[in-house]
Image (cartoon, rainbow, N blue to C red):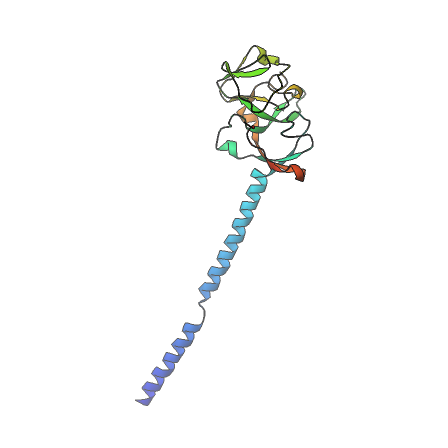
Length: 205
């Protein structure tokens, strides 16, 4: 009788002791969760660095005063794999020169696929309707190929620099129509110099 009671007493104490001991699975779960969190943060950081913060240095003043020479910008290189470019987007694209050299440019999209772009009387016209280019007072001196109108095909864009009269862009044969496949990404953030840091957005209306 006493032996049975004694045995039951110690059995209950032993069970209570084991209930107080941490389940080793808890430690495993904590470690796995920590590893997953760290890996997730690293993957996100690498993704942002590669696809959203692709750094580019502005060369020349064709985009002034939106972007000035030697300023640094971040380019989103994944957006156009999901969405089509929009009018007024500032993009980075590349073309091949006659000697086979890859040339990279930063310009603003003016004309969209299927549209006809014409420059007359110093203004830009899209399908015979004047384009609202925001707070832009100066006229375009050299209409280039757009003097007679440029018809854009499927996946073709007409680009210009914001500094109209000091820009090599779709008005000239050296660049011409920009194909979607040559667009490398959207310029979205000016990162240097620090005093000029800010979002590169639409035109001021």
